[in-house]
Length: 223
Image (cartoon, rainbow, N blue to C red):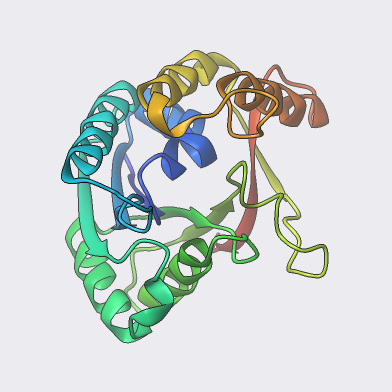
């Protein structure tokens, strides 16, 4: 039986970086994957234009087609300024998506990331997916995003993976999705580069004896 999977990310490209291979694996297994993005990822930049936002949205559409995401939701909160929005406002919009897609599995950001939007997204997910009787959510996992998870202070909450998803058969799909986000990627040795994303997946795979993996922290799993 297919499962409903929801990826809750702050910005488009976070989903491909953090769990692109996992998304592709779910789709290959017959699961239905949805994604929701809380902020646009562009408007905080100096001289950001409507064209730049349009290009990023077009890249997201291409990446989601590659990954097999059935439907994406854009909530439109201010980029890198989500701390200026009452958490209740964010949670209420996210709850509408959760009520619509009724996910059994949720993937989202680590709450120790450098990016403020990532941390607030994590908090909003835990609130919107609180374990009340009748909730469809059985599993919540936090993924890591290159150039924010590893960039935070060493005294911040560390990312300590407890789950490794073998994406050996889906690594090229992840790489193709990242290539769709070409404008957001950087040149090596920047950590958010195509070459280092591949190296990182292979490194995570080596931790558990597979060709490539994405690491997760289990936030809540109901068995």
